[in-house]
Length: 420
Image (cartoon, rainbow, N blue to C red):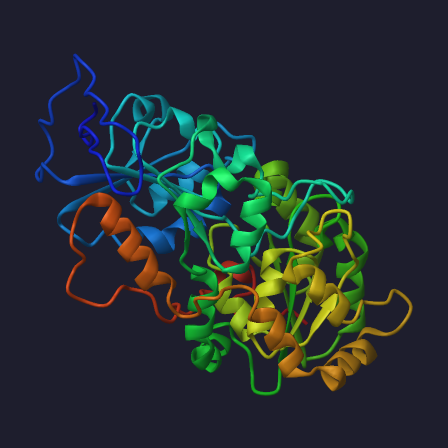
């Protein structure tokens, strides 16, 4: 085992037998604190890291626990190690991590988790299992496939769900995972809801003046995403909103940045950033920006769905029926939110969306994100500590409002002022 490794123990959350320590491993000569419970965070992509950081925060301040990270091979892992190291995380090379025993491992994806020598807790990496492979009725849903839930063909220690309704979907797709399923909640939901009272502070931090409207353009990844329409959408936004009353910011899925390369994405967006369009970088927390928005132009991705938690009207920049799980709240949102028209002026469409906005209808969609609203951090910490065989610390689980965003990262060339 590495300097961080310990033999794993049995747990009430798994039937895995203890794993022996590997022979010939180096002693822990350089660690100041030894004998800690060790937790491995398996961070396949930047998207997964950002999901898992709310989980890491539940453990890492405890002197009884050592948290380390690793990044397995993944086609969309570009920038993940750099992101982790900038955060100060201890990052083990993947091959070293697979030779080491840990007390627990947490991941937001199943790839290569059968190689990890620990009890595994699997979390969803986004909201509500929104996407599927094709439009066929029996098309599998990402996150609910057998290969998503049974790494190496065996159930993990725990499968984390956000909503009780997910149990029914799990029963159909992979009943073997039901005994280890735990309805815990959704971290992004809870942090956004806790942050909404700070909306004015976020807007001031973004440099918005009284009366200005922030238009948040959100995009998932893939050929049906709104990013695939940016070549026509962004020119419209820039040319039709030539006034001091609107600011435009785009929130692009980290998989777009990883898949195409950050240099290429910035080059594609350069013409519009020079005209004042803000871009949330992939390693920045998008949630405070979403809280600050006055209107959301989005697609079928998780960020658009989380927009239903705010009071911002939503316009959909196209449909993605083939990719959308028809039983998900994203499918319901597609029937509720008006669709952006290529023929009518944007100002009129924005006014229409605001006039037709009915908060109870959007709140009903938002209620489908989690059946444990406000309780993710409490529930998740209880699950983690139970699986580690430790009592929880005698204080409330961390969570709460998000910090204010750094506007200089979104509008780096112009600071807080939009160029004339």
